Length: 630
Image 1 (tube, rainbow, N blue to C red):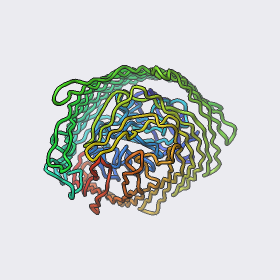
Image 2: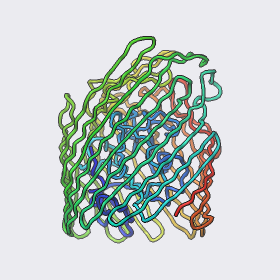
Image 3: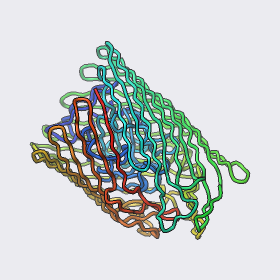
Image 4: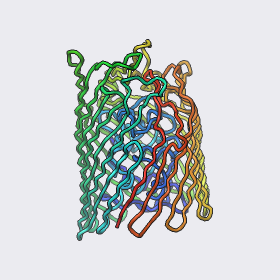
């Protein structure tokens, strides 16, 4: 796995040749302005932009990025955590994430299942998000098939603290507080956030029965950081925890999660070289209840309760060299995951499945400059830890050519994703749909190519990217049988698929107004039969208008997607939808601000899935909050 992102990022990524954004000063290394653009399609979202998008958690705020979706349309606010895998460019199909997500350089993807607990990260604590679409670098292997998302925390400052409270309809309450300080070479800080949401029924009114109750969530999360800096030496330690409870729409369908993660790093900087070592350890347990629901939805019967303890340990070592003519990053990493799914069947019996996966990888990435042309080349050798595919080789190559406000870029790459312990061994049930594990799964692979162009002006910018990806051995949920009472699916390697499309990203600044627009067209189909890949809309788009004047900020935005299918047979159709949201913020004093946010302003009902009963997204949600910060 990839735990070195903050080390190699300066070599790989940039969006604006003229005005590269200021990066976070992490505990490992300083990420400065990047003038050597990578051959990748990238979106940078800073803290001010994150504040203009409503949403309790980051997944809702990142939906404005073209192509960003979870496995289903539903928000992580009410979705079962196991469906919160991230998809970019329409590379969906299962709840496992095909996108690598890192938080301050450490893997945020769940080690057992690959999905992401977005409740772990407070949006207000994030200084910057960098979304890179496509596997254009060989540094990241497993889980980066469709790209990567890097989250950077705000740097530790001298005597900085805040307190906030937010409340809204349907029982929303969000208190949070934090404190950071520096003393000589030492920096330390801590923050905590809690949230309660009474929820809403996730099936339409016309089919609700006595068993249908609101899907809700409560969680408490926090993190503590310590860093030490002395000359060219830097070290850091970070601890974060999460305790989360959810009701999933009926009395017996519940789940809860507890996570504790500890990460540490050390870095040594020379004039043109650096060495960094990172390590982490995580323990967690996921617990859930599953039931069979009568056709009338007036009764339900417990089928089994599940407990999934897991732990992961890993680390990386990265050496970097840079000068005016060429740059290079070389290193290796290792990750060991152990977990078991215990199913306590009703009325009697215990079913278990699990194991250990140890992955190891070595990689190298270089680039060479020839005037305005920069060439990239890289390779990674991965040992997957799987008996049926022990090794995988990931090469990549690309170029960028820039002059003035223009640049062109292109890349070709080969990448893979190994099945998770969840896909191999865990069985689960969503309503009356059962999905079985499959210990015989093989890694899925991708061969991709893309070409694009970017233009950056004083007040405007535009980017366009054409891409094509061939997927082989794609892992998806294959329907085995369908009856009125039960749908049975199993995770299987389903041959090959083709994914191709175009991305467009636009921005224009005019006086106090800023407009952002994005569009993604993607056609993702299985090669056998030509059916569309489940949970992938062909058209996705967003538009956002922000007005800033003195201490006032107002934003309105629209997010939309065309129709998509729930299943591999393309029989369960989810119509297209659009949602309007807005945020208004007023700075009352230098330290005190008030904010009003609203989501699904028009209160439109839209489908998110079938279990086989129809599932719907959140209704209109509004919140009002105060924040005091110094």
